[in-house]
Image (cartoon, rainbow, N blue to C red):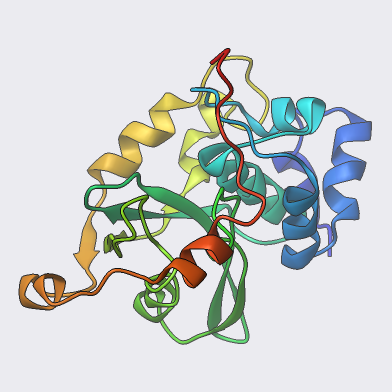
Length: 212
C-alpha cells in the first residue's frame, strides 16, 4: 500500500525512478533486482539513485538500495551491520513480516544474501549467516551484530538521491551498539570450512582484474 507519507518519502526520486522502486513490490522483489545486477569492487558508497542508474552494487550499496526499496513499498528503511574478525563487515537491510525478521543483501559470497522472514529475533537472523560467513583462509569470522539503524534519520542529507558518497551512514554503523554472537571460548574452537563449502560460497564471485 502506497500511503501519502510513502509518496512524500520518495519526493527526491523522479516519477520513473519511483515506479521502478514500487514495481519491486515486496522484499523478495528487491532481492531479485540485486541478484540480477553485477557485484562491483570499487571503493564507492553510492546512493540508491546511482545504483538504479548504474545497475551494479556492492554489499554496502546493495543494503542501502534495499532500504530505499523497502521504504518505497511501505516498510521502514532499516540496516543491520555484521562485524567480523580477520574479515570485512557485512551490511543487510532487514524487514519484519508477521512478527519475524528477514533480510535483503548483496554479497560476493553465495550464502550471505537473502533470508526468509522466519527469524524470531535479530540474533537468530544474524546466526543464520554464521556458517557461510567466511574469509579466504576458510575461517568462520562473524562475531557481532548491530541494532537496526533507521535511515530515515538521514533524510535531511538526501541519502536516497544525493550525488555525494554515503560514508556518513558507514560512520554511524560503526558507532551503534553491537551484540556478540559467540563467546571467545567458542571462537577458539571453531573449525575451518572444507573446500567443497568454500567453492560453493565462491560461486559467481567477482574478482579484481589486473587493471584494478
